[in-house]
Image (cartoon, rainbow, N blue to C red; front, side, top):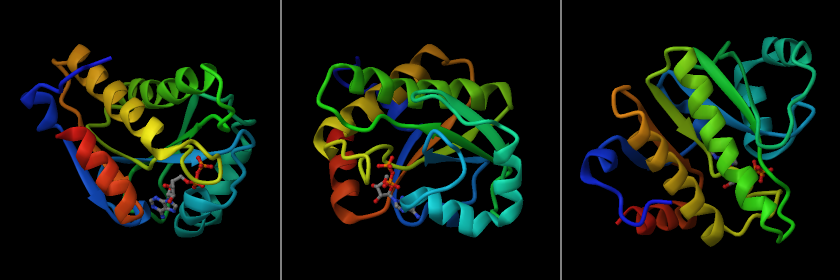
Length: 176
Ligand code: ADP
């Protein structure tokens, strides 16, 4: 994991506060559950904003394992694509961190195969799934920074979309 983030990588990462469904970039990431059939939190907000066509496409995907990622179109959102990833339900075991990092890495890999060049992530697992923000934030930032560094030839912009001020503060502190 990265100790300090190189300036070039920092320039590819933006921390914003707001509703991820309002963003205008190539792709947003959904913190989904294994059914991929909608839920509460950011998942519910994305399904409401994207419309019923999203649920129809999600039904064809037959769920998603924890740490993995699947892609759909964006429907009524401004984004072309939505990547659905399933974060771990926090259990306090080392597996949590592995699976949370997998969410970010697999989402970025999938995005690259779809020629996506800007992607926004919510703070996966830090809501209903109970991952402590202070533990989840360095995993999110370091995993993304490591991926960007190892794909230096690929133009990718990453937005961390924080729903509340506390989450934004945690990301900004980690980025400094
Ligand atoms: P999980 O089940 O992975 O914990 P949640 O949706 O409960 O997912 O929470 C993940 C994060 O998404 C939390 O920080 C929550 O505040 C945030 N969140 C909820 N709604 C939105 C939204 N519309 N845009 C961005 N982030 C959101």
